[in-house]
Length: 259
Image (cartoon, rainbow, N blue to C red; front, side, top):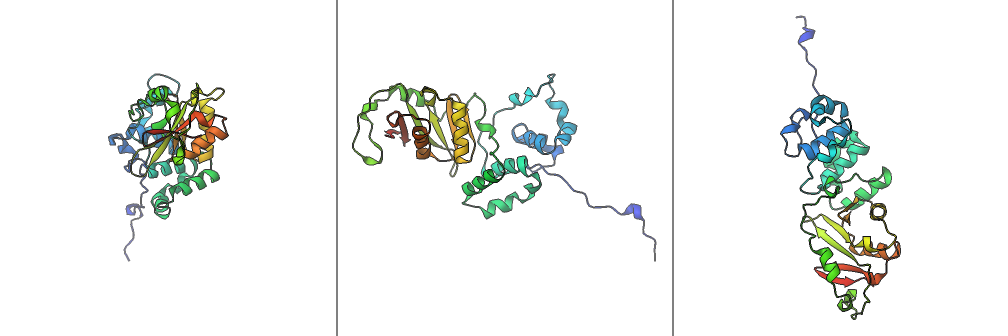
């Protein structure tokens, strides 16, 4: 029997693939989402590998980690898969390989999935699309102007009830749903900063806890992930003590008093 050359035997290699772009980390720099998705994922999941591959790129002469502030803002919010990847990257990176199976199992029940994950592990990671004060999104332009120019006494009472005259008040809050794509929506709260004694960051944290999803403050607006139009309005009235006469629902462009 011929002798076996042990040195010629090779063992299988394990190849790591980026969960953001699907390429090996060495090639992430060629991905269009390199700055916005690949780098944050690699920093969290494999910090040593990130330092070895790209550590020199992010060092711009400062000892602080403020280079993250220079990261370009994403052009769209996370997809459901990206939300799940971010969640497991933060809490259970060893389960990242089963993301597709989880999505298939919970298809159509994504909200229940994320609610369960938040209860088990903790708060959902912030979507970078909603972070920061600079906004390129023009979908909400004019809402604040509409607030100031509203004829509060002529708006209909919700659910088709008779019109009710509302006295003008300094506090005016609009709650509206913004659809980002066919399935994804966010709830915007405009004008809550006009309510005395309410801090937007604290209110945002309360919304995040109540709806088990991300919530952030941007340009004096609170953006809550998901469609929670009436629930948010109810919370503003019942939890934060804002009069229902000062809260309005944006229903297809018509501002309807919550009172």
